Length: 74
Image (tube, rainbow, N blue to C red):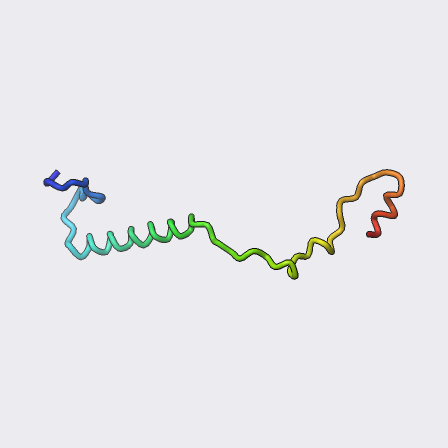
């Protein structure tokens, strides 16, 4: 360590990259991390309007038994 309070996030293991190469790598990794964080964030949507609710028009489950055929028409 070179006296930093925080350890480095990137360590060059082999070779001698230029400052521009390290900057490009850092930019790409930062962009990917930001995209991954945005994908994990929940998307907030407005609640559905009662006017758009289609469930009242849908048929309920059919249950066998006396008079079931009459309920199937509702």
